[in-house]
Image 1 (cartoon, rainbow, N blue to C red):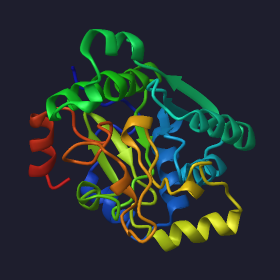
Image 2 (cartoon, rainbow, N blue to C red):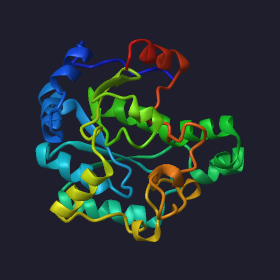
Image 3 (cartoon, rainbow, N blue to C red):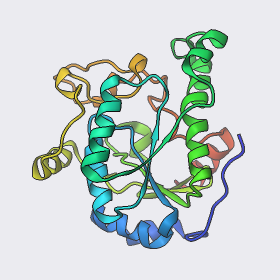
Amino acid sequence: MEALKLVRPGEGLDLDAVNASLEGASAEDVIRWASQSFGERLVMTSSFGAHSALMLHLVSRVVPEIPVIFLDTGYLFPETYQFAEQLRTRFGLRLEVFSPRMTAARQEALYGRLFDGDEEELRRYQELNKIEPMQRALRELDAGAWIAGLRGQQTEFRSGLRKVEVQDGVYKVHPILEWSKDDVAAYFETHDLPFHPLYPWGYRSIGDMHSTVPVDPNSDDDRSGRLLGEKRECGIHLPSSPEEDASRRSSGL
C-alpha cells in the first residue's frame, strides 16, 4: 500500500521541538495546539469501545466540528453500533463511517476466517478490515493529522510513543498518552460519562466480536482481553511497512 504524503498546514514540523514544547501540557492544550496547527485537516478516530466517551467528550469540547472516523469492520458487537449512535447524539459528533471494500461474508467465502489463522492471515485480516479503510479515510478527509486516545500504559509499543508522531506520512497526536487508569476513572466520574454497555460484563478493551473476550477482574492489563496477534495491536496504530517502522525507530519516534 502506498504511504500517505504529508499535507499542509503543519508540514515540516520539528517533532523534537514540538514534543519539548508540549511536555507537561494538559490534554486540552495538546488538542488546541493540534487544532491551531492543522485546522480543518485535523481528524480523530474512535473505536466506540469501553472508554471511548472520554476522548470524544474531551476533543469535541475543544474542536466541536472535528470529523470522527469510525471503522465499521462488519464484525463489531451490536452494542458497539448502539453505543456509537448514543454518543453521536449526546456529543453532536460529525461521524464519518468507513467500511472494508469487501464484506465480511465475501471475505469468509473466499479466504475463510482469517482472524482465526496464523500471524500472516491475521495481518491480512487487519489489512482488509482496518488498515485499508483507515488509510482511505485519511485520504478522503484530506487529513493532515489525527488524534488518537492511546495511553502509554496500554502496551509496550504505546509506551514508546510521544505526544506527536508521524505514522505513514501523517501526523498523530496523543493527548492522553501519559494518563494513568486513575486519571481515566477520575475523568469519567467528573463528567458523568457512560462506559460501553459490555463494560459491566468484564469487557475492558472492545473491538471485533471474534477478538474480544472478558478479562479477569483482578487483572491490571485491560488489553489482555484483545486477541490481536503477537503485537497486541489492531493494526491502524502500527507503521504499515518494515521500512516505515525502521525509519521511525532510527529517528527515535
